[in-house]
Image 1: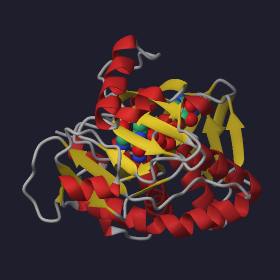
Image 2: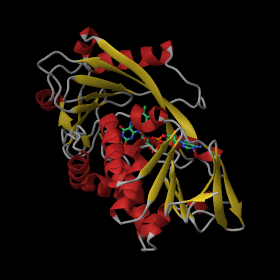
Image 3: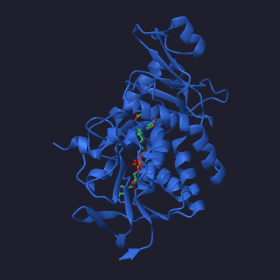
Length: 348
Ligand code: FAD
Ligand code: GLY
């Protein structure tokens, strides 16, 4: 059995890579095992940093999300500086148009919302403006994180699939992979929607289908539009990402005509001129969902295995705070926020 690293991270999506970078910056040796880099939800996402548009109610989860959003500017500068790559981070704000009147403070009426965004459907009666919500190009971010990790000396092993986590009493002794047994002092599980395949924790896939179109040269959208069942995310390079379905169909792959029809209908209803834009791409991905829609972070039943999974709809947003909290947990530093996301909440 090979034991060559302080920390072995299983999973190389945005969560595993963000943790790897943070641990390496704290002078630990780190190996990341990645079964399939492009299959990660991190490539499929829309990249919205949207605790407010996602309407997360006041809770420890909202605190976690707001903290992560506030960490983003500095975190991104670090990654872009080390990797030399652009991540498309854009503090564009998110506009949330609605077809029915809602009675809360700070509501934009029909005339006001049209000033924020010309070209909205005539059915829109008003909406919300969240100036602090933002976006990042999640594909560019994942590549930049990977390049950062490699520049720092993280050992990234592509094509290595963990088949089982081997344990003795309350300790992980190694992981069985397609390349043999591997061992380490500490282990981190960051396998997204596939986490339930390796450990008895309730994480399961929630499929999301997406598509993108190309905007005309004079990009008409300067902020994300977050409708009640659709979002439209303009990138700075002229792509417009449209999402997403939310389907309980296990790991069933592919885009479906029904999924694409639903997205296109809703997007065109919200922002009619989209119907003329050329389609670039369709894709899908699997959100790592949990029964209470909160992530599972920190301790596990095994003292040398740490959990960083179940980020569901907000894993891109939560990457910087997760990296920070998990690196502190590995260093045995107390972070009270972690107790809200402990796996034991699912034990009966
Ligand atoms: P993943 O990115 O899925 O990575 C898991 C990795 O583990 C993969 O590389 C996989 O190959 C590897 N792996 C799995 N099993 C094994 C194994 N046995 N051995 C070795 N490696 C293994 N979040 C936001 O914040 N904002 C958004 O706008 C947003 N939009 C989304 C839209 C869609 C359609 C989807 C699907 C998700 C969206 N999300 C969004 C959620 C976000 O994408 C996820 O929460 C996040 O990417 C999870 O990251 P992860 O690293 O935990 O998992
Ligand atoms: N956060 C957007 C999505 O999961 O579709």
